[in-house]
View 1 (cartoon, rainbow, N blue to C red):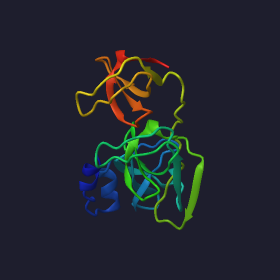
View 2 (view 1 turned 90 degrees about the vertical axis):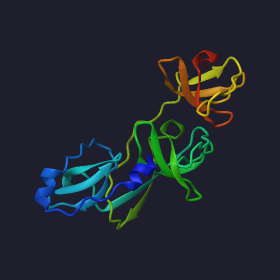
View 3 (view 1 turned 60 degrees about the vertical axis):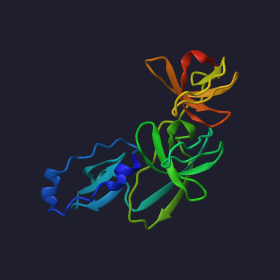
Length: 208
């Protein structure tokens, strides 16, 4: 995901009117975070949101202030790839961008950058640090908060030993935070004891 993002090249300079007809307009929802790429004219900006680029009216965003947004990990997460960022429970992380509906990119206190599941952090953020005179413009980040309920928490009934790289080990009474149930009966989630994120058989657990 990140490698593909970094390989993208900037568009060639074009006349503002030509750009408007050649470039797709960017759909925005209230609360979206938008990275401004350039001014097109007095009324339009070109920006990027969730990896998608396009044009949108200047009046749709707050310009002139950048908000650095920090959030807290509510579950541990162990990175399994070079692009992922390990997090400890309670660790503060600065959000950089939204990768997709399931993954965020952020920076930890050591300055390390990587991606992690949206479900392991609080995504309704109340910690804002305003940085003035930044050349980028953002609106407020207002993703829906993850409500931690029993519907997401499961308890392991039996031990399970992984047979593939994307699977996680379970011990009896392990608590697992489930983020997805697959059609084949397997679940995807984070084992709270180890912080490992991966798949496991759904019939090995029960709702906690």
